[in-house]
Image (cartoon, rainbow, N blue to C red; front, side):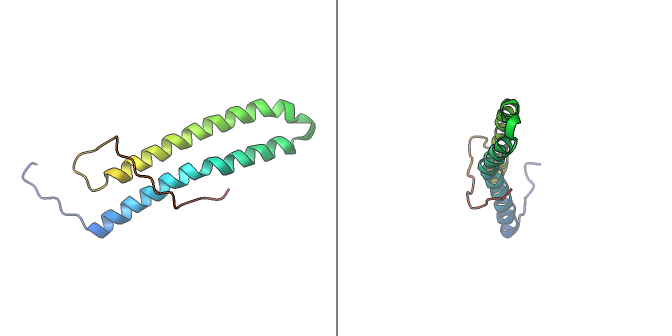
Length: 101
């Protein structure tokens, strides 16, 4: 294993890195639209808003945490593409992608 050569097309490696950067950014950018959607759900509940609000807050907090973990994970993958050793402290998330809910 130590004497084998690893050949990688730099364009393919760059495309893979960009794809994971975009995925990380998409996860990160989902939090704000999700927050707005939960506010809309609460305000649209009318007389039941008081009963809905605690569940909406819990829902939002859990999804924001899950999206944060996914964003960090995708960023770590992107940062380590092309390296022969994984560096879990290196995260470089591209902020150019946003998704619309």
